Length: 96
Image 1 (cartoon, rainbow, N blue to C red):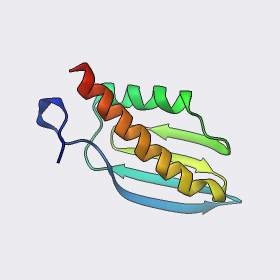
Image 2 (cartoon, helix red, strand yellow; image 1 turned 90 degrees about the vertical axis):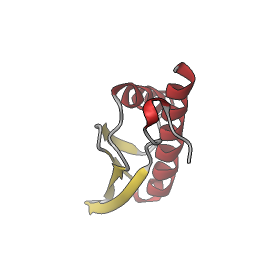
Image 3 (cartoon, rainbow, N blue to C red; image 1 turned 180 degrees about the vertical axis):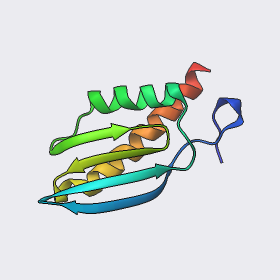
């Protein structure tokens, strides 16, 4: 398994939950480990640059990510989160 600098494993989504909220969906993903500050900043920057249509809200902290989207956007949201998380981890590796 690939590791980032400092011996920590790359963060991944370890658990996903989706809840119905009116006509929207609330998705909550728990990370396999807390994000480092620079990983979280890189993830947020990448998310802002690649904003997905249909998202009402998005939040990120060290332990989890959450979003509100239209029902048809949930699968794409998880894919985008996986991609951006990989990007954030890769950006940290390259900077090290």
